[in-house]
Length: 156
Image (cartoon, rainbow, N blue to C red; front, side, top):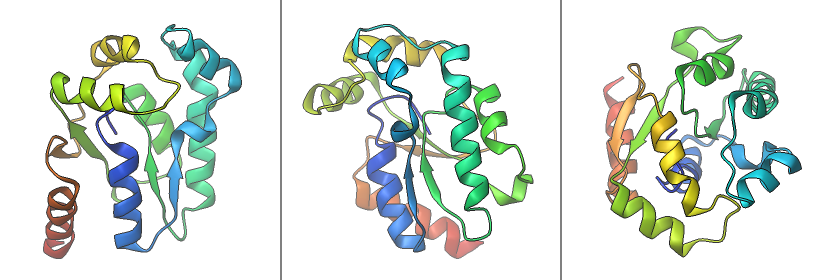
């Protein structure tokens, strides 16, 4: 979880491979109306996000017995609460990718995505840093982040 450009999808795919679990790209669950809104530089509000979050929760529940790795901004605690419905705290692991704005801007400028750089500030403003999460420095190399996660799992 984290703001746009922090590396959720990149890390999520690699982490899912490491765990031998399916990877779920949260962006694929956005409605066309939400995608158009973002393309036009209009930030999503809580009402826009609610159906998306409930759809992601439904997908997580469908994979509950086998597990999965989800890449999703999950910016607010209320969003994480929706995503967590139907799970006990020990059934979910939150990984928060923290990143400096300079790195975020560089990454967003390089990619082709419906989320424009103009919306980055609104995501940063909406972000409620989670208390219960593994926090990683997302400006680190992907292999370093995977090594940190492997260490975490090795210790568990």
